[in-house]
Image (cartoon, rainbow, N blue to C red; front, side, top):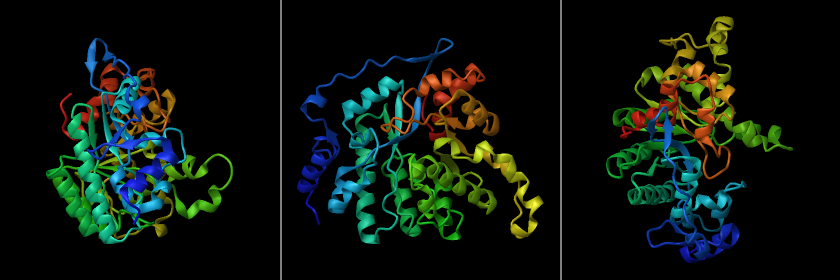
Length: 366
């Protein structure tokens, strides 16, 4: 196994000349550590101070990556901002200030679903401990989603309970499937039951749609541009159509990237089993129309334009939308402006999306 020291040295050269602190997060290289944070300007709506909460922000934990040896380098996304996944606290806070974000809920995209049990047990224990440790240094600015080894549902149940009760994490970040196995599979039901019991939020962040890798080749980074929203769309549709959301009606699910394509064409779902009943399971009788389940799910506002946000709100309700930036990847650098410039939203709806909905979802003070 690659030593922690060697991992630090290799990653620093490959990513961005960074060093680790004793607390297991990152300190900046000297020049970066001395950078002054941007002054945080309070966000105001109609004279009212609003606490802004970003539910979609990423990081990586170096001690966990060190367990993977040289393979760890492949975990970093090939994007702008990738080096900032290794958190420099002052730099991260400055980036949040520049965006007008008061609090980020950090998550780690699952890269461990194919790992063997002993390794993934150790890896996730480190990640959840270090996430909690980081958040404790700035509890007014940072919160986090836990990591779960969903390929071992019994283990994931234990990890989720420990993450919420022992570490105070807000729920868990999960992929769009587990190696192609959809979340509606009964094997995962104990995890959803535990999440419902704990009131833990499950943040679905896609990992492309690997089955279509050949189709995604070519210009445009289609594995992400198309693959990520599609992965979320499939995950949500299975949760709806297989009756999982009926079985766990209090389950708190938040979907990245505006829920993928589902909210953009949701009404088609209401017609599918009428048009082709032979392609639907007669033993599954949903309690509501498929589109109505969207009103109990949550969606981040990472949809880029005021018109797209207007449509998302019209489909799912303003009470179900929260800020999502994908920080430090620069998909949405002006999340507050995006919401404020959506003229179809009332002041009350803007306040809710900027932070009120997330505060209610996570049980935070506004």
